[in-house]
Length: 223
Image 1: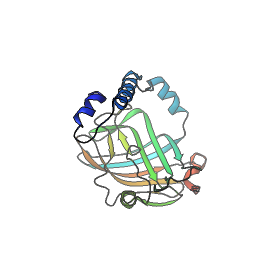
Image 2: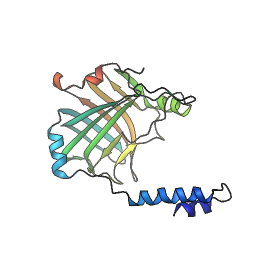
Image 3: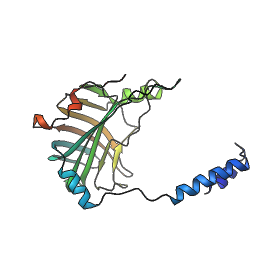
């Protein structure tokens, strides 16, 4: 459906000028002409993962799919901080995020599925501690903190994702949490794919002190 068609369908609710429709059609055509997102090929992905330090993932899933693994995998930890941007009047202050992602060069068997990529996040990260996700969601719903999406919580059987990929189940967050001691991350979260629902529990640990992400132990500067 073009923007003109969409505008026509919404005619009882809103009216747009000819100039508005022209701008919307131009934007729509630019989006249609945009190239597909760049996708990492197998050789590039292998080379990237071989450069990462490793962590031990201990993970159990139960529900529609069940399985347990303990495996050492390449791991990348990143942090997103709100920086020095001033909050917009009437808007909640953006939160800091810490994201840990482990990836397998070759998929690892996990019950009736497999694991290629697993990502866990800590919204509102300020250093070691317990982060109740249900409480953070309630605070986001009341605009006390920034609304946060579930994309950085995933368990993917395939590097390219798809319908079998599990994401954080936003409708089943009661009792869900993520915690960090500064040397490890533990989690108990609900996840769901298009066809399955599971509970995911476990830890990510770093055996070698030199491999432990500094960002886990350091307080986040919220400024």
